[in-house]
Image (cartoon, rainbow, N blue to C red; front, side):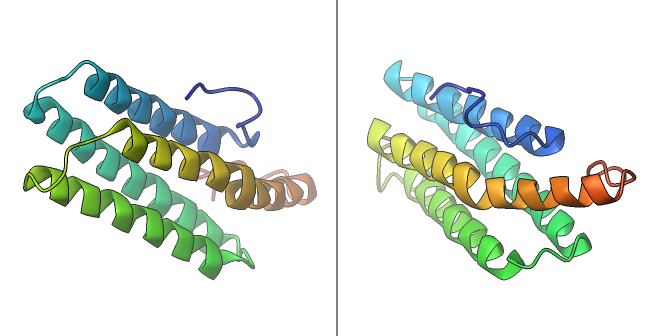
Length: 142
């Protein structure tokens, strides 16, 4: 999965975090393709869970602070993905499943669709607020 301008939502803090998630998924995919050892893949999955949880927490904090009208639906989508990632992490750690390119492709697809849909809607909402209130600039200013 390559980061491209078509994925960007033009809200810098969101795009930076999305790009980091894309890079991490690509790193996991490369490690699976290269046959990396379990220790390395456990480490990368742990990073993916941490990165995803932090990103979702920040988005949810922003949505609450901005009184975003689609907060609950957006938050529920976050819960679904993080639960899927945690299940995969646990199953891999307990040797119930191996990591496959298909599982990674599923996460990449979910992320792309989520960014293009739910996050793009959130970004439009943030930009409208920024246009009406120039002091709204991102997570550090809210």
